[in-house]
Length: 168
Ligand code: ATP
Image (cartoon, rainbow, N blue to C red; front, side):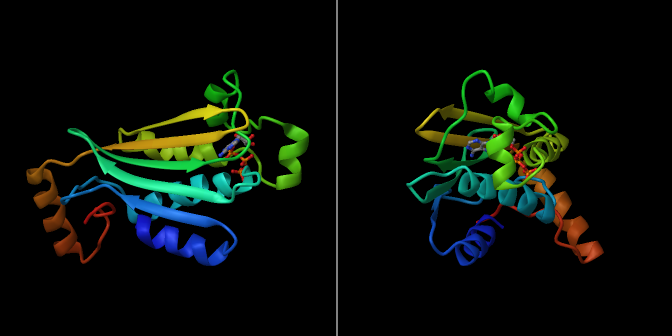
């Protein structure tokens, strides 16, 4: 899903270098509906583009820890002040109302992304510095092999591909 969304965003924004670094060496599985994963990625990549400055780059990376699958979306744009960092995930919060209005949007994207990630017992956070950019990180619980086998059986019986968003 990540590869697909990054590819789509590259086509829509040909003047941005949107790169994907895949640090997964082996299979890693997290449980999330494909369209939820897509929505989260689109919100974060879209923001990275919207709040960029001269450096038109977005780095997406995919990795795994002992208990989570981790995604990071990094931009080199305007950044977020420390006081605003906790608030950007609140509904309708926008850092600079006048300037943000020019860029369009309602201040909903990140609250939706957080709600989706929370729904899967994951976490979303941001590291940011004014003037140098932001890194949004998402972690989703890593699935055990047993749980993965159960979900694959479920997918096979329903003919759906609902639970295999992160795979290699
Ligand atoms: P939309 O509803 O279209 O997503 P939005 O971008 O204003 O509108 P959020 O995605 O929730 O809403 O973001 C909230 C605020 O956080 C933004 O208005 C912006 O001020 C700040 N923000 C979000 N992403 C970034 C980023 N990558 N760099 C700098 N500021 C950001």
